[in-house]
Image (tube, rainbow, N blue to C red; front, side):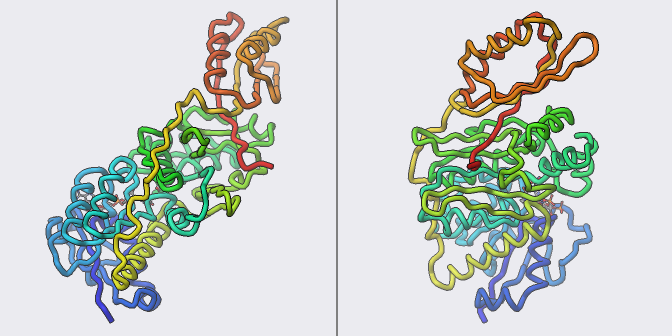
Length: 430
Ligand code: NAP
Ligand code: HSE
């Protein structure tokens, strides 16, 4: 049997998961790939650390011992960050090695450069683990759904924020308290700002939408809002409106351009994504031929993410055997424009506090009517000291219209406070 040797750049959560899977399931992996696959070396910072699943692996802190090793066929980058990961991947490709990476931060910025380099050297650069951990969504879009024109991709693709929002909804817990728990469980990034401010989901959405719409979408193209302003009161009102609040990553082909946004949204409880709870991820994809599809699974963690990496390794080994390395390439053959935020059309939930006096509601309604916005539902609750808390839910309107109404509202003397404005997503509801 042919021998295939792997060089791991990084041996943390994901790297050790890759080693564990290769050690625990050798018969099936070797039989399916017609090769004997093993990890030869791993690059780490701290050579003194005790590491699980490290039998037979030689550890180094010198990247060239992997990048220049002619016996290493496949380099797996699971160290994270932009540099030196980018330079190491470029060097591995230039040395004729195929590469697997789980690095969404890097791909969302330098994906084009890396994929073009892989193409130039006739090598595979696979990245299934970079989006939604163990869910095979990249292979689904890149291979299984290529017959389709994809109209939308809507995902819950950050496990930490879904874990936080689920615990706030199901157990009535506070944001800060659940965030700490998510960090302790190892779901959150080292700096959880990337999770709670929606940046991690935006990076993953840039990757997914580039593939779905064959157009290069970068991290900076994505409109992003995080979940830090979501309060237990918003979650309670959402429930009264038969909705849940989720951090959604939304990409839609609108014909005249692509709409790409990550933000918290009220989602009807009947929507297929509304039941995705805890650290789980799901991606809902609509294609013109296949119709609606949904992919569900664990979006983070050592073994789920390792599963995606090892599957990429096996595919690369099969391509090596069939002399088919580097065939898929970049795939961004279109150049669709990215739509500006003020053209987004959604419903809005607006929670505010006003004086509980005659004409106040009529004036509110006038501000929205003047912006051409009509209401879908309204909740009003009396509060102490002559105040009323009002939740307005609008029919779909353009973001620009909403801003006009909020500007008028902002200078209204009877307004005490706008607590929150949250979008409403009904795509996929029939
Ligand atoms: P991690 O646990 O922090 O592990 C990083 C590993 O890389 C460690 O072994 C570290 O060495 C090594 N490393 C980092 N910088 C290095 C440098 N400059 N030189 C040498 N070694 C270096 O990270 P992880 O959670 O496994 O994540 C790895 C990648 O997978 C990231 O791109 C992440 O976004 C992505 N990802 C992670 C998950 C997940 O569930 N964790 C899911 C999907 C994608 P030491 O051990 O010596 O510190
Ligand atoms: N912090 C990320 C999440 C890890 O919570 O989804 C997986 O990319």
